[in-house]
Length: 150
View 1 (cartoon, one colour):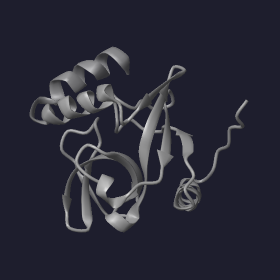
View 2 (tube, rainbow, N blue to C red):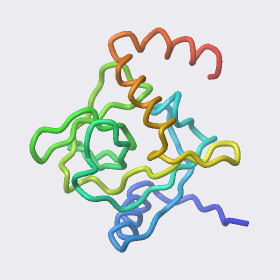
View 3 (cartoon, rainbow, N blue to C red):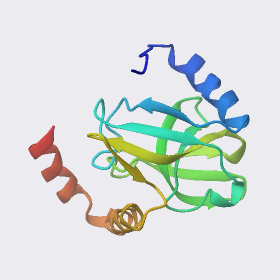
View 4 (spheres, rainbow, N blue to C red):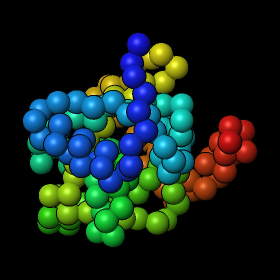
């Protein structure tokens, strides 16, 4: 049985940065609602892993330290030189920016109800593409999802 630990966020994120830079993967339980409906607070676990810079493209979900110094897991929606632009799946407009050097890890899989979903799978990529395409009208399906499940 896995041991559960509660650690200060900044300390934990820098520890994750160190482990990932050594080639390890790390699994954590998600806190926060910014990635709803695809990654749910308290229910889902994400496995974070090392990455190549070429993977930091539209659709990739990454753990970053943004320009404000906040740590977050959001989807990359664009890139401008050495900066990535991010948007949480549960957010409508508020984007964040982070330097490529501040990307700590990328999400490799999501554990949900005992089942693992790879971010490389066709199903994950199809859902991700569809959700990004729905950005202009995302407030309606997201509002419905929140009323039904939150």
